[in-house]
Image (cartoon, rainbow, N blue to C red; front, side, top):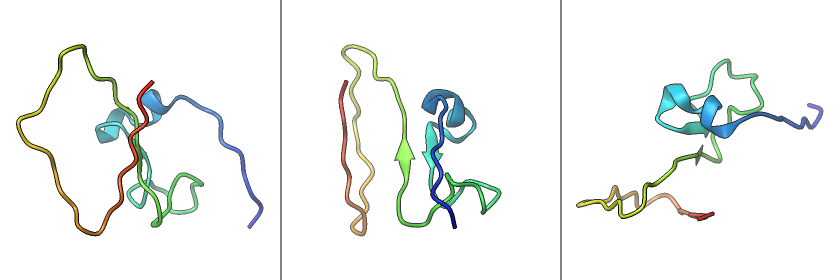
Length: 67
């Protein structure tokens, strides 16, 4: 398989999947954004936003990048 460079808008790509735009749930399976080894989500947090509870996954590693 040839390496591919994908250009686009993360917010637009993830709009129908709660912000998720790379992962096993992307179809069709031959889409370069479809992979079982990584999941990526784009979201925008409003100033002062907080959560009462966080999701936990003992099998995952999370990296958050705040811009």
